[in-house]
Image (cartoon, rainbow, N blue to C red):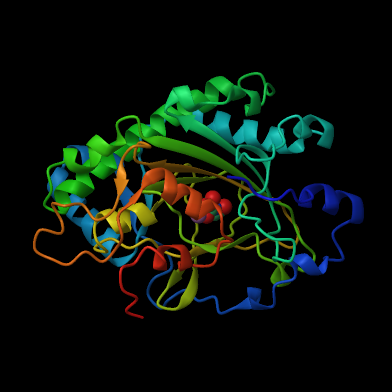
Length: 347
Ligand code: OGA
Ligand code: NI
């Protein structure tokens, strides 16, 4: 698995001032309708402490939100403030390092991890206006510390704490979701023992022609659940809702949580992964960090047998490794990857 090497957008903007945009980054479709739907200007909020304490009411809300939105903000979560703030500060500092420092962590051919970009599979494909850093964080034996920055000095220890804390929250959310779906909590939890977590730090430089580029192409995440932390104050995440792009306004310190493709497949479509994208700000850089959670590598990816006892399977069942190879071998294009996992294409 690999992504073709591409130039750093941050370095390009630093060198040219960012006024002219190379054609490889020009996206005529970028200015598509953005709408905040009347009466709704925010994605739903789930209170993690309430979910833990008063189980029934908040978990019933969680179930409806998973069916109706596929996206929510998680507040009052258990990750200590110093860990969240430490992650934000370290990521900002990492991307501010001179190019020579970041280069030490550049992706190598045949690998996804490191500093660079993902999902670039051809020389003529349009590119996203962003750089990123991608690391495997769980299970701990899968870590490739060669790609973990050695500065700032506490980068590794903070990421280690953050990784464990968000995995713990994800396991709890998944257990609640399983119960909401009428399953024993272990049905999903067992696949997450030794589950894979990867972390993607996104850096979106400003662009003078922000409405002509895309920070992150429309896609759905391939995993079970993603937890995104907004690193600075600049917004940019948008989700596809009722055919339009709906802007997400992250609350300070909250996680933006979304259903991924594997959860859609596991639940045979009861929970749907939602297409989303990131837009770029004309004046300010934007940073975010996404933690992706998938089952362990030996899990089969297909509708859970407990869900499809009384209904037809809508998705293929494939090996997790094959599933990942397929996901990383194509450019991101909405939910086209998931469509290829469907047994019949209804639409
Ligand atoms: C992602 C993603 C959005 C953002 O990393 O998969 O969708 O807000 N990020 O940067
Ligand atoms: Ni995403």
